[in-house]
Image (tube, rainbow, N blue to C red):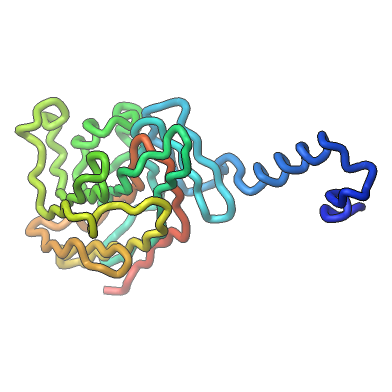
Amino acid sequence: MMNLFALLNPSNRRCSSWRLLLLFFTFHFSLFTPLAATTHWRIEAESPQTRILQRGDTLDITSPQGLSLWWDQPLTTPCTIQYRACVVVDGGPCDRLSDLNCFWMASEPFAGLSKRGGRFAESYRLKCYYLGYGGNHNTTTRFRRYIADTLAINDPAHRPPVLVEYTDSAHLLRPNHWYAVRIECRADGLTRYFIDDELLVDYLDPAPLTRGWFAFRTTWSHTRLTAFRVTTEQQ
C-alpha cells in the first residue's frame, strides 16, 4: 500500500486535487470520533446541537448552551479528582472565553437528568459543591455549596451564598491555556480546589458531603477535557 507521503508527493500523477481533499478530511476528522457509548461519561445537554468528540482520553466539547458532563462512578471521601482542561478560542461559533466549571459530591444526579436537561438553574435541585471558574462571561470565579433547594430555581433569594469569590484577572480564564485542576475531598469535611497548583478553595464543611458524583460543567463554549482520574485514599 502506498504510504501517505508518497501519495502527497507532487510528482505522483495520481495525486489529484480531490484525492488531497479527501486525504485531508480523512486525516483531520479521524483525530476525534463521537463519544463512545461505553464511556463513563453521561451527557446532560440543553441543546441538541451539543457535540462531544473523543480521541483517547481527550474530549472535545462544543456546547451552544448549558452542559453537565457526569462521571458515572460514585465518589466517596477521602478522594482526589484530577483533570486538565482548556477553553478553546479560535474563531468558532461557540468559542467564548467563559465557564470552566464543575460540580462534585453531587447527590443522585441521574434521577433528575431529564428534568434538569442541562439548564443551569435546574442544578439547584442538587446537593453538591460547585466551582464556577471564569463564569459570567469570564468576570467571576466563585465557590458555593448547593443545598437542594428547589425554590432557588426561580427565586434568586433562595440561592446559596457565595463562599469564595475572585474577580481579578489572575483568577479568570486565559484562552487556549491547559489548566491542571485538582480537587481534594477529605472525610472530615474539608474540600480543597486547586488550579495550576494554586489553592483557590479551602472549605471545611460543618455538614460534609461524603458521597456523590462529579460533573464537568460549561455553557456556550468550546472546551477540551483530558487526563481525568479519581484517586480514592485509604482512611
